[in-house]
Length: 261
Image 1 (cartoon, rainbow, N blue to C red):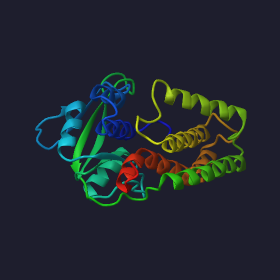
Image 2: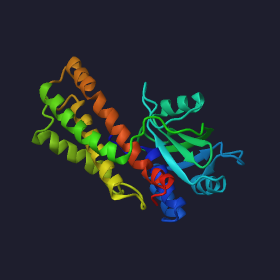
Image 3: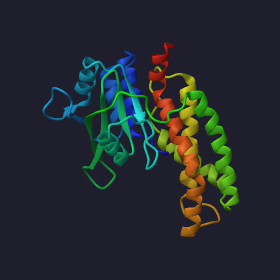
Image 4: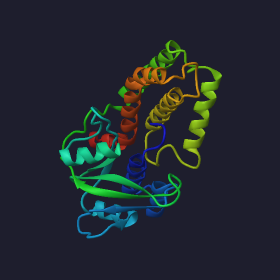
């Protein structure tokens, strides 16, 4: 939850590129981030994997006008619309990008190319999707209200479970998580409304709080049963934070559909 999903980077900077707000080189650099390379496999008209620059240009010619994010979890197909094959692949990856304007979606496979977790390359698999409203995605306004309540619930739950969820140690840990996550990156790409940035930042803060709470080194409860109790208490909060992330990443497409932009 805390770490920026690759689907979020692809959608945000892909949307900025489609809107003409960034160059292809800048978009690809931001999408790849600290990964070694990203390729796209299964693109219509291509028999082998291609680079991101070519892939994003080809998606535009196929009629894609925007990119949405899906962050599904077991029992919660957040942002998905089918068919089952695509949903299953997205659920396994825990993230996906769904194209607006063409019935296509992209699901990442991440491979280690060096020491485990140090260097990775990503292959985005292009699959057919069903053109239908995405599941359970709130508006930005709804997401912001839900997050404020979720943050209160998380703090209350951690207090009841004897976890220092609102004390200086936890606050310092949250700040450290956020500093690592935000180092060298923008929260969102150009073209996103300020409210989307605010919602995403708050969702990431809630995610950081959850990460701190579920680590055994923080708070008074450190047994496996107590850690499990924390996770159960925070499960609805984590769900709310994921929904808010999707709402933020998808906001420019939703606004365009409503004719706001």
